[in-house]
Amino acid sequence: MTKRRRESERPGSHAGAPWRSLIAIGAIVAAALGVAAWRYLATRPPTRDGAPSWSPDGRSLVFYSERTNGKADLFVINADGTGLRDLNPTERADEGAPAFSPDGNRIAFDSDAGGNFEIWVMDAAGGAGKPLTRHPGRDVAPAWSPDGSKIAFMSDRGGKGFDVYVMNADGTAVERVTSTGSSWFPQFSPDDQGRRLAMHVHRDVHVLDLPTKTLRRLTTDPLNGMYPTWSNDGRLAFMTWRSGRTEIFTMDADGSRQELLMSMPSGGAIDPRFSPDGTHLAFVHVPEATPDQPQSADQSRVIYVIDMETKRVRRLSR
Image 1 (tube, helix red, strand yellow):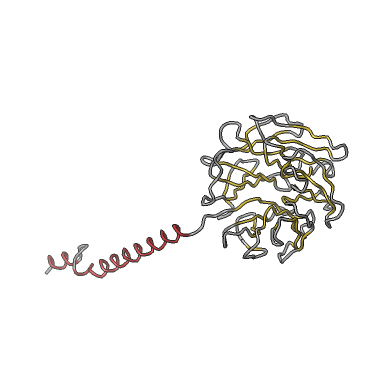
Image 2 (tube, rainbow, N blue to C red; image 1 turned 90 degrees about the vertical axis):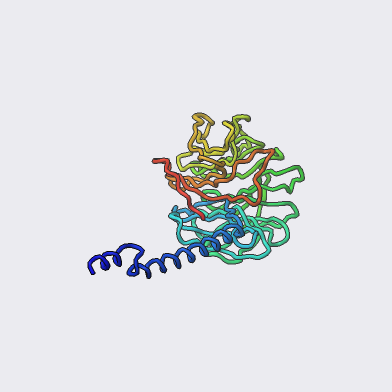
């Protein structure tokens, strides 16, 4: 009797038979879920996020994403990665390059909702928005002046490539301020009431003094620089492929002290944007590409944030 009891209590005996059934069922369910997950991941469109912009209080970011229907919509997300929300769901229009106004009440962006890319503005809470420009040329990439009275943007309305224009925040008094035919992504300086605009011209960072229209070159290709962003203390961050990879560097406003800030283990880092207090920097992680081999549309683009003090990098969008 004692022997039989001990045998029945061993794993695999009659007493353990129900557990064997449960394990078998669990394995079948796990396998089914695994197949379903694989099918979902295989068919799900890749995350395609870009152009992050911080709110004035640094608590959230707005960016564009192609995660819904292949068209880019504007989304807002908390700085800790929670609270993702679509600001203006659209089925046919592409929206991009969003930027919070200095008071945090509005967002400027570009959209082709009217059939051509124009500069638009919407309430920060979301909604349809309205166009500020109406021109046959492409108007894109708006940036607010520190006092919110002006918006800079890039446009090919001049007929010879993209140049930078500045207008009042209501869309009036549009003025062309560069004539290079290759001026991209302007950003107002924060430390001198927006007297200067950083941008990249061809493949190098330049700074334009608006009162004098003097353009100063800060990087020299192949030690190139693109997508500049200002810190609150007047320094600049920018992307560069000078070392053979796409990385983020920083420098002083006169072009001195050009130093590596961060490099991802794989892929490239583009489109950096400092937080208002300069303690964090958002950027977009992309598959590595070159001017001759651009990124494929079926590859992901994800937003990350780096802590400027600790250099810790964390993923924001998913």
